[in-house]
Length: 289
Image (cartoon, rainbow, N blue to C red):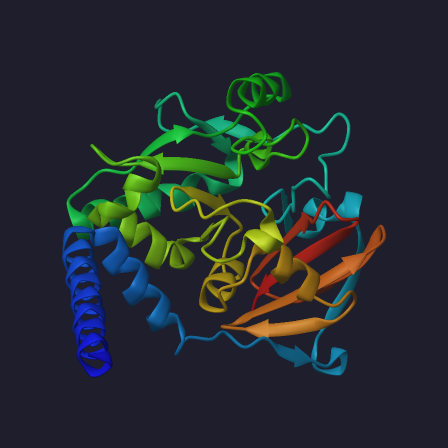
Protein backbone atom coordinates (compact mmCIF):
# COMPACT_ATOMS: atom_id res chain seq x y z
CA UNK A 1 0.00 0.00 0.00
CA UNK A 2 2.84 2.39 0.91
CA UNK A 3 4.64 1.59 -2.37
CA UNK A 4 1.42 2.27 -4.31
CA UNK A 5 0.98 5.65 -2.61
CA UNK A 6 4.57 6.64 -3.40
CA UNK A 7 4.04 5.65 -7.02
CA UNK A 8 0.87 7.74 -7.27
CA UNK A 9 2.65 10.68 -5.63
CA UNK A 10 5.53 10.46 -8.12
CA UNK A 11 3.12 10.35 -11.03
CA UNK A 12 1.22 13.38 -9.71
CA UNK A 13 4.48 15.26 -9.19
CA UNK A 14 5.62 14.40 -12.72
CA UNK A 15 2.30 15.60 -14.15
CA UNK A 16 2.62 18.89 -12.26
CA UNK A 17 6.16 19.38 -13.57
CA UNK A 18 5.04 18.64 -17.13
CA UNK A 19 2.06 20.96 -16.78
CA UNK A 20 4.31 23.75 -15.49
CA UNK A 21 6.75 23.20 -18.36
CA UNK A 22 3.98 23.27 -20.97
CA UNK A 23 2.46 26.39 -19.41
CA UNK A 24 5.84 28.12 -19.41
CA UNK A 25 6.46 27.10 -23.04
CA UNK A 26 3.06 28.42 -24.16
CA UNK A 27 3.54 31.66 -22.23
CA UNK A 28 7.03 32.06 -23.68
CA UNK A 29 5.69 31.50 -27.21
CA UNK A 30 2.95 34.09 -26.76
CA UNK A 31 5.17 36.76 -25.15
CA UNK A 32 7.71 38.35 -27.54
CA UNK A 33 8.84 40.62 -24.71
CA UNK A 34 9.81 37.65 -22.54
CA UNK A 35 11.65 36.01 -25.43
CA UNK A 36 13.54 39.23 -26.03
CA UNK A 37 14.50 39.64 -22.37
CA UNK A 38 15.88 36.10 -22.13
CA UNK A 39 17.80 36.36 -25.39
CA UNK A 40 19.06 39.87 -24.61
CA UNK A 41 20.20 39.10 -21.07
CA UNK A 42 22.04 35.92 -22.11
CA UNK A 43 23.66 37.83 -24.97
CA UNK A 44 25.05 40.35 -22.50
CA UNK A 45 27.16 37.66 -20.85
CA UNK A 46 29.69 37.84 -23.69
CA UNK A 47 29.72 41.66 -23.93
CA UNK A 48 32.10 44.09 -22.26
CA UNK A 49 33.56 47.55 -22.71
CA UNK A 50 36.87 47.95 -20.94
CA UNK A 51 38.04 51.42 -19.95
CA UNK A 52 41.83 51.61 -20.19
CA UNK A 53 43.65 53.90 -17.75
CA UNK A 54 45.91 56.37 -19.56
CA UNK A 55 48.95 58.06 -18.04
CA UNK A 56 48.98 61.85 -18.11
CA UNK A 57 52.48 61.61 -19.56
CA UNK A 58 50.99 60.23 -22.77
CA UNK A 59 48.52 63.08 -23.20
CA UNK A 60 48.84 66.64 -24.39
CA UNK A 61 46.86 68.46 -21.67
CA UNK A 62 45.73 72.05 -21.56
CA UNK A 63 44.44 73.69 -18.37
CA UNK A 64 41.22 75.67 -18.82
CA UNK A 65 38.84 77.51 -16.53
CA UNK A 66 35.22 76.43 -16.86
CA UNK A 67 34.09 79.87 -17.99
CA UNK A 68 36.71 79.82 -20.77
CA UNK A 69 35.86 76.41 -22.24
CA UNK A 70 33.79 77.54 -25.22
CA UNK A 71 36.27 80.22 -26.29
CA UNK A 72 38.93 77.50 -26.20
CA UNK A 73 37.05 75.28 -28.67
CA UNK A 74 35.17 73.06 -26.19
CA UNK A 75 31.49 72.16 -26.30
CA UNK A 76 29.83 72.78 -22.94
CA UNK A 77 26.55 70.90 -22.49
CA UNK A 78 24.38 69.11 -19.91
CA UNK A 79 24.60 65.57 -21.28
CA UNK A 80 26.20 63.85 -18.27
CA UNK A 81 24.24 65.28 -15.36
CA UNK A 82 23.36 62.61 -12.80
CA UNK A 83 19.94 63.45 -11.41
CA UNK A 84 18.18 61.34 -8.79
CA UNK A 85 16.89 61.58 -5.23
CA UNK A 86 20.47 61.85 -3.94
CA UNK A 87 21.61 64.34 -6.56
CA UNK A 88 19.00 67.05 -6.89
CA UNK A 89 19.07 69.70 -9.58
CA UNK A 90 20.63 72.95 -8.32
CA UNK A 91 18.29 75.77 -7.43
CA UNK A 92 17.64 77.95 -10.45
CA UNK A 93 18.69 75.23 -12.92
CA UNK A 94 17.75 75.97 -16.52
CA UNK A 95 17.67 73.18 -19.09
CA UNK A 96 19.10 73.94 -22.54
CA UNK A 97 16.10 72.78 -24.56
CA UNK A 98 14.57 73.06 -28.00
CA UNK A 99 11.48 71.68 -29.69
CA UNK A 100 12.14 68.56 -31.73
CA UNK A 101 11.08 68.96 -35.38
CA UNK A 102 7.83 70.86 -34.65
CA UNK A 103 6.60 67.76 -32.83
CA UNK A 104 5.64 69.58 -29.65
CA UNK A 105 8.23 67.53 -27.76
CA UNK A 106 10.88 69.67 -26.08
CA UNK A 107 14.22 67.97 -25.42
CA UNK A 108 17.72 68.97 -24.46
CA UNK A 109 19.55 70.59 -27.34
CA UNK A 110 22.52 68.20 -27.10
CA UNK A 111 20.22 65.20 -27.73
CA UNK A 112 18.45 66.51 -30.85
CA UNK A 113 20.66 65.00 -33.54
CA UNK A 114 21.12 61.74 -31.65
CA UNK A 115 17.38 61.19 -31.29
CA UNK A 116 16.86 61.92 -34.96
CA UNK A 117 19.45 59.26 -35.86
CA UNK A 118 17.91 56.76 -33.44
CA UNK A 119 14.45 57.39 -34.90
CA UNK A 120 15.73 56.92 -38.44
CA UNK A 121 17.45 53.66 -37.46
CA UNK A 122 14.25 52.36 -35.82
CA UNK A 123 12.25 53.17 -38.94
CA UNK A 124 14.86 51.64 -41.28
CA UNK A 125 15.31 48.46 -39.25
CA UNK A 126 11.75 47.78 -38.08
CA UNK A 127 9.44 49.79 -40.33
CA UNK A 128 7.91 51.37 -37.23
CA UNK A 129 7.98 54.98 -36.11
CA UNK A 130 9.40 56.07 -32.77
CA UNK A 131 7.43 58.73 -30.92
CA UNK A 132 8.02 60.78 -27.78
CA UNK A 133 5.30 60.49 -25.16
CA UNK A 134 7.00 62.61 -22.50
CA UNK A 135 10.14 64.72 -22.54
CA UNK A 136 11.03 67.98 -20.79
CA UNK A 137 8.95 68.96 -17.79
CA UNK A 138 9.06 72.02 -15.59
CA UNK A 139 9.30 71.62 -11.81
CA UNK A 140 5.60 72.48 -11.53
CA UNK A 141 4.65 69.86 -14.12
CA UNK A 142 6.73 67.27 -12.29
CA UNK A 143 4.99 68.08 -9.01
CA UNK A 144 1.60 67.67 -10.71
CA UNK A 145 2.60 64.24 -12.05
CA UNK A 146 3.84 63.21 -8.61
CA UNK A 147 0.51 64.23 -7.10
CA UNK A 148 -1.40 62.27 -9.74
CA UNK A 149 0.71 59.10 -9.94
CA UNK A 150 2.39 58.89 -6.54
CA UNK A 151 6.02 58.27 -5.59
CA UNK A 152 5.97 54.67 -6.85
CA UNK A 153 5.98 55.84 -10.47
CA UNK A 154 6.98 59.52 -10.38
CA UNK A 155 9.95 61.42 -8.99
CA UNK A 156 9.74 64.55 -6.86
CA UNK A 157 10.58 67.88 -8.48
CA UNK A 158 14.32 68.41 -8.50
CA UNK A 159 15.08 64.69 -8.68
CA UNK A 160 13.58 63.98 -12.11
CA UNK A 161 15.73 63.82 -15.24
CA UNK A 162 12.73 65.01 -17.22
CA UNK A 163 13.53 68.48 -15.92
CA UNK A 164 16.81 68.35 -17.89
CA UNK A 165 15.18 67.38 -21.19
CA UNK A 166 17.64 64.47 -21.38
CA UNK A 167 15.08 61.80 -20.45
CA UNK A 168 12.49 60.64 -22.99
CA UNK A 169 9.55 58.27 -22.64
CA UNK A 170 9.11 56.73 -26.08
CA UNK A 171 6.56 54.51 -27.79
CA UNK A 172 5.45 53.21 -31.17
CA UNK A 173 1.99 52.71 -32.67
CA UNK A 174 0.00 50.39 -30.42
CA UNK A 175 2.85 49.73 -27.99
CA UNK A 176 3.61 51.90 -24.96
CA UNK A 177 4.82 51.41 -21.40
CA UNK A 178 5.83 47.81 -20.67
CA UNK A 179 4.09 46.86 -23.91
CA UNK A 180 6.76 48.80 -25.81
CA UNK A 181 9.03 45.77 -25.45
CA UNK A 182 6.56 43.63 -27.41
CA UNK A 183 7.21 45.69 -30.54
CA UNK A 184 10.16 45.42 -32.93
CA UNK A 185 10.82 49.11 -32.32
CA UNK A 186 10.95 48.59 -28.57
CA UNK A 187 13.32 45.67 -28.87
CA UNK A 188 15.58 47.61 -31.22
CA UNK A 189 15.70 50.58 -28.84
CA UNK A 190 16.49 48.36 -25.86
CA UNK A 191 19.27 46.50 -27.63
CA UNK A 192 20.79 49.20 -29.86
CA UNK A 193 20.19 52.63 -28.31
CA UNK A 194 23.72 52.62 -26.87
CA UNK A 195 25.08 53.07 -30.37
CA UNK A 196 23.16 56.33 -30.72
CA UNK A 197 24.08 58.02 -27.44
CA UNK A 198 21.16 56.75 -25.31
CA UNK A 199 20.82 54.29 -22.46
CA UNK A 200 17.91 52.48 -20.84
CA UNK A 201 18.00 54.62 -17.72
CA UNK A 202 16.31 52.11 -15.41
CA UNK A 203 17.50 48.67 -16.56
CA UNK A 204 16.38 45.21 -15.50
CA UNK A 205 17.61 43.90 -12.12
CA UNK A 206 18.99 47.30 -11.06
CA UNK A 207 16.28 48.67 -8.77
CA UNK A 208 18.62 48.46 -5.76
CA UNK A 209 20.85 51.03 -7.48
CA UNK A 210 18.34 53.31 -9.20
CA UNK A 211 15.37 52.91 -6.88
CA UNK A 212 13.20 52.47 -9.99
CA UNK A 213 11.78 49.30 -11.53
CA UNK A 214 12.71 48.31 -15.09
CA UNK A 215 11.36 50.84 -17.61
CA UNK A 216 12.11 49.72 -21.18
CA UNK A 217 10.40 52.82 -22.57
CA UNK A 218 12.47 55.37 -20.65
CA UNK A 219 15.67 56.34 -22.45
CA UNK A 220 18.25 58.88 -21.37
CA UNK A 221 20.79 60.76 -23.49
CA UNK A 222 24.40 60.63 -22.23
CA UNK A 223 26.25 60.76 -25.57
CA UNK A 224 28.95 58.60 -27.08
CA UNK A 225 31.02 56.74 -26.02
CA UNK A 226 29.44 56.73 -22.55
CA UNK A 227 26.21 55.15 -23.81
CA UNK A 228 28.14 52.26 -25.39
CA UNK A 229 30.14 51.62 -22.25
CA UNK A 230 27.12 51.71 -19.94
CA UNK A 231 25.08 49.46 -22.23
CA UNK A 232 27.80 46.89 -22.85
CA UNK A 233 28.76 46.73 -19.17
CA UNK A 234 25.08 46.54 -18.13
CA UNK A 235 25.67 49.37 -15.68
CA UNK A 236 23.40 52.06 -14.38
CA UNK A 237 24.30 55.69 -14.92
CA UNK A 238 24.96 55.92 -11.17
CA UNK A 239 27.50 53.09 -11.32
CA UNK A 240 29.22 54.56 -14.35
CA UNK A 241 29.69 58.05 -12.92
CA UNK A 242 30.84 56.74 -9.55
CA UNK A 243 33.31 54.42 -11.30
CA UNK A 244 35.17 57.30 -12.95
CA UNK A 245 37.96 58.14 -10.51
CA UNK A 246 38.43 61.87 -10.00
CA UNK A 247 41.45 63.29 -11.84
CA UNK A 248 42.21 60.13 -13.83
CA UNK A 249 42.12 59.64 -17.60
CA UNK A 250 40.63 56.70 -19.50
CA UNK A 251 40.58 55.60 -23.11
CA UNK A 252 37.80 53.82 -24.94
CA UNK A 253 37.06 53.49 -28.66
CA UNK A 254 39.08 56.47 -29.79
CA UNK A 255 37.93 58.72 -26.94
CA UNK A 256 39.64 60.05 -23.82
CA UNK A 257 37.40 60.40 -20.76
CA UNK A 258 38.15 62.14 -17.48
CA UNK A 259 36.14 63.19 -14.43
CA UNK A 260 37.54 66.22 -12.63
CA UNK A 261 36.65 68.76 -9.97
CA UNK A 262 37.26 72.47 -9.54
CA UNK A 263 36.98 75.48 -11.79
CA UNK A 264 40.31 74.73 -13.49
CA UNK A 265 40.31 71.46 -15.45
CA UNK A 266 42.78 69.72 -17.74
CA UNK A 267 41.52 68.93 -21.23
CA UNK A 268 43.35 66.54 -23.58
CA UNK A 269 44.01 67.63 -27.15
CA UNK A 270 41.60 66.23 -29.73
CA UNK A 271 39.29 66.90 -32.64
CA UNK A 272 36.13 67.20 -30.55
CA UNK A 273 36.13 68.25 -26.88
CA UNK A 274 32.96 68.14 -24.78
CA UNK A 275 32.56 69.03 -21.11
CA UNK A 276 29.47 68.43 -18.99
CA UNK A 277 28.84 68.99 -15.32
CA UNK A 278 28.01 65.74 -13.52
CA UNK A 279 25.67 67.40 -10.96
CA UNK A 280 27.83 65.83 -8.24
CA UNK A 281 30.31 68.68 -7.93
CA UNK A 282 32.48 67.65 -10.85
CA UNK A 283 32.94 67.72 -14.61
CA UNK A 284 33.17 64.93 -17.17
CA UNK A 285 35.46 65.64 -20.10
CA UNK A 286 35.04 63.66 -23.34
CA UNK A 287 37.60 64.11 -26.10
CA UNK A 288 37.59 62.41 -29.48
CA UNK A 289 41.17 61.64 -30.46
